[in-house]
Amino acid sequence: MILCSIHEFRRYLGQNSRFARLANAMEPARLSTLEKGRRDIAGEELFVIASPDAVTRETAMLEAHRKYIDVHVLLEGTESMGWAPLGTLSVEDKPFDVENDFVCFRDPYKCTFALEPRTIAVFFPEDAHAPLLGNGHLVHKCVFKVLVDP
Image (cartoon, rainbow, N blue to C red; front, side, top):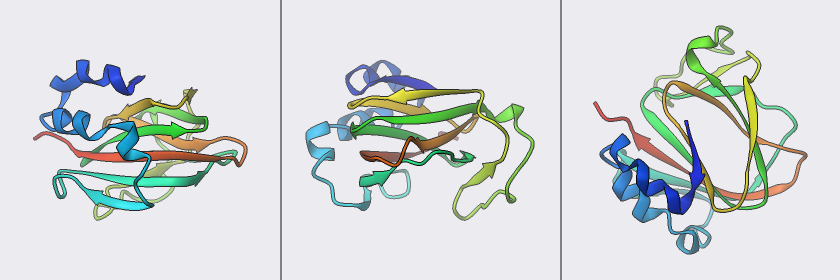
């Protein structure tokens, strides 16, 4: 997992061959104008899901992905997130959904943290995460999906 400001992200470009293209796409002014939904940047290798009106909730299950790295970019509001190392989890809510690259766990979070505007959280396949924790307030965020390098 990586937590940093949008502008500090460039120091992590070596972690994935698509991160340079991702860094160029993470311009806050451009992201804040995106309408809700998915926008392809490099087809299935790199795309963004804009959520200008996401609502936080009191609890959420940990989720994990195998095919994609999740990069959560908070633009407005405050969002808390839960985290746990995937290897420590054992209580799946349902079996892994291959088509949607998604699995949820009922295990507790190992820690929680808050994202402030213009900060990002990068979750690799070994990172389970619970997004949108809060008390029912609106946040404006985008989630980039980055294909894992072979």
